[in-house]
Length: 329
Image (cartoon, rainbow, N blue to C red; front, side, top):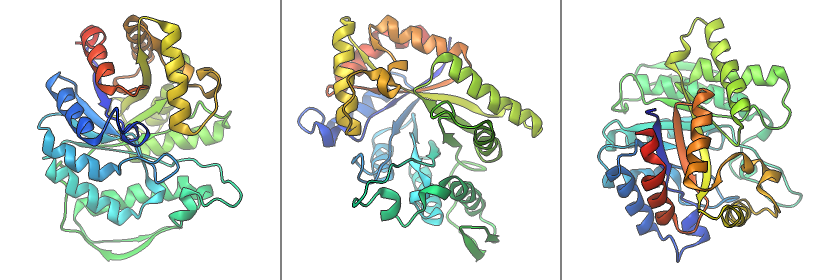
């Protein structure tokens, strides 16, 4: 089975474990990912709640160190950014990368803490309207990339006679993937339908995480149904999944390292990965990992972004490349 498989080179790990994974190793890892035949390289996003190297700056550096792999974000928290600057920055990146980018966006999430400035507050954004804001942003970004003058009168953004001569290299535009998790939080059918509609109306792909195969199949099915109702061919959408994993022949050891990594990464105190839904992903043998990918592929997934729960990112990539990747090549 030939799947699109990319690697998240993890821009947070140099902050958490700088001795084990400094920035030069992150850049080198991306070069190895390309040399080993993977399809793409990805980075995450956050302002300061999960501090990391800034996404677009890092991708610009990676564009200079790679030639073939696609470069993507999993995923940029769009409502924290001005859509005009995001459009211009991404167009620049796409030109520097010679048309190899995938813009992955999400609405983000935040639990405000009394007396602590959150990322949405710091960005001057309203967490309660983030879905509406991102929908408008994606419309603005696509219009700016088109290079034609336009007006925009939305609830959250207003533009008059705007035109940008800076266009991305990809025609008609770089693909946009929306990352969302409809299976998390007991969301109402109405909200799930709205999330599916946003993907159909504004995206070229969809990505999620922490989903069982059954949950993935249901969510992807809802998006496909929505596409058909909108007279859009579901085949024009790429279904993706970001998978967290740790490979070790000792499953207990893999799970222990996984819990510690998640707690460091998310400032949490989980006793088990299942408490945070991360237990849906594989922590164990290479066979466990391959089986998890197969199960999600059977549920409809076509593109995987693999993220390693480890200080030693190089060793995890080596094991995945040697023992998992061949099953999908």
